[in-house]
Every structure is written in structure tokens, then in C-alpha cells.
Length: 254
Image 1 (cartoon, helix red, strand yellow):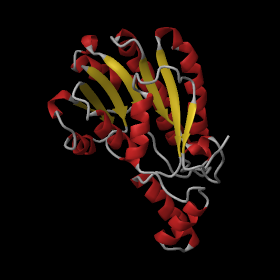
Image 2: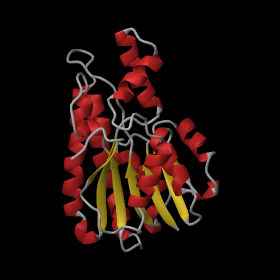
Image 3: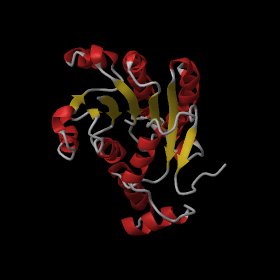
Image 4: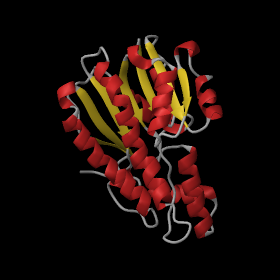
């Protein structure tokens, strides 16, 4: 049985990834997120529910990870992949209520802690190749006003990806990042609504304006991102590592 950890599994891309992975009968999932209720909502959508586990924890907290792995007796865990997807978005503004540290620690430190706590189990897994995929963003590629913390964290994840890809290559652990653009998630909807409120627009008007900046003039669906992640984390490919993979309807082109 292959096991995969998915963080941010309670909604959006993380939930969609769990649904895609769980289509394979020989896959067990560890669904990680902040809220047990949303994780159980995701679990309810999966087949073979008894194969999967729910871990409501703070991805930044090493002790939380260690206690969870102890609770499931993880010594024989065949951990073949980690989808480090948990994160938060939104603006930050310098001053008393600046969200700088919150956004950086959840998105960047949380990803680092997730991977390092899972690493011993990845190294011990049976598969010849194992995989880590990190959710970055197209905002790692270009700046957006008032998103200083988010842009910084998501750009930092690309440096983390490259460093870890080299560090873990001898163990045949492949490390890649995805850089999505607009994806139809609650986080994206909240961001567009905030833009609409600021400009005195209806949501639909703001949505259309944002899509007009995207060459394909559309928003991605979580299922499409999840299918791409599933392929990158499969052993159908064993040559891609250390890469930032742009899946954002042409928002950024090299």
C-alpha cells in the first residue's frame, strides 16, 4: 500500500488531490489540515475510507507531526509522496495588525516543517522513486501590490524546492513546485471579492476583469491542478526534479 500525505486537504486543491489519489485502490492517504471537520468532509468523498487517516494539526509545529506519527505507529509506513499544499493568502499591511509573520510561517515554515518531519518515512519507503510537490503560486513569478508576505513566501518556496531537490537527489526523492494562477477555490473567491469591494464593483465584474489579464481568459479548476500533481508524483515520470511548474493559463510565460 502506497501512502501519500496531503496538507491543506480540507478544501480546494488539497481536497481535489485527495479525490484523485484515492481513485487508486492501493493508495492510503493522510489528510492534514487545521480543522478536523473539513478534513472529515473530504474523507466522506473518498472510497475505501478505512484506508485513510485524518490529522488535524498545525503544519508549522514539529511536535504535532511527531505525535501524529507516533499515534499511527508509522515505522512501517510506506510513504511514497508528500503534497505540501497547505497555505493561506490575502493581503498584509505594515503596522500593528500586519499579517506578515502569519503568512510567512504558514506558507513557508509550515512547508519546510512538513517535509522535514515526513522525510525519514520517505527515505524508508519501498518505491525506488519518491516525490514531494510543493504548492507555490504564479505570484512567485511576479509581484502584486499589498501581497508582500504572500509573494515573498511563495517565492521562497521555489528556493526551498531547488535546494531540497539537490539535497534529496541521492535518495531518489524528486522535489518540484507548482505555480498555479487563479484556481476556483474559496481562497480565490475571497480575493476577488476583496478586489470588488475595494473598487465598488459586483463580484462578477471583478472576476471578468481579473480573467481579462489571463491569456486563456479562464480560471482553473482544482481537479485539473490535482490531476497534474498526481502525474508529477507518479512513477510515470522519474526525470523532473527541482522545477517550478507553471499551470496558470498563461499568466506567466518563460
